[in-house]
Length: 233
Image (tube, rainbow, N blue to C red; front, side, top):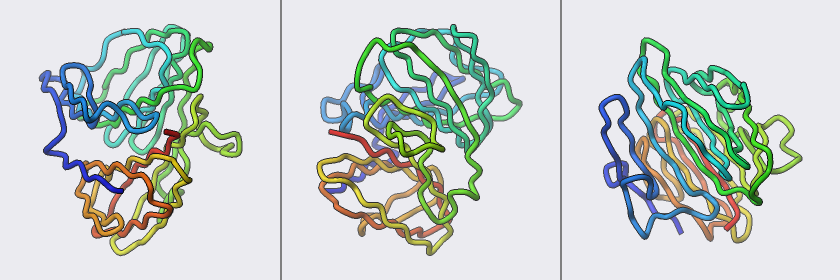
């Protein structure tokens, strides 16, 4: 089963400094049919104006992954962590028992991010934060695991949930297959470019909710940058 969710069909909000599109119910956007996908709870497509951002605010018991598409985001939190994550790179905040953080675009250009929330396997653990670069060349023509709850993914940022976040950079005409485990859920978004997913065309920033597909094949119609989440039910 593959359900295409066109970008224009997504919920959203325009706060001036922040233009947000929501793949799932979030804040003022409520859709009982889009409350999550497996353990995936939030996928926000955020455009943040220069010299603006999210002021300090708290979270608890959620795995929050930020994938930077353009520009950069600067993170600060109540643990004393501070870091700047650039386009193509990823940060993970495990909110655990509670953390307060801010995310600002201190750049002179617009920043665009995917903000992804995944429900953790257990609540109340100590909070943490980490970031790392993932040069696009490393994921040319294939999926690379960016963040993972599996110990064997030693190069990925750690998650506290039965899930992986993966990225791929494809040239037009490239084909990549992904084997989805039995009973698992996947959600795919092309950050840029158009692809065909088992015969279903996805344009940039469309979503695809996938399950009961042992293997799905992605064919790049144009040069494309892909982000994929694979989670437990």
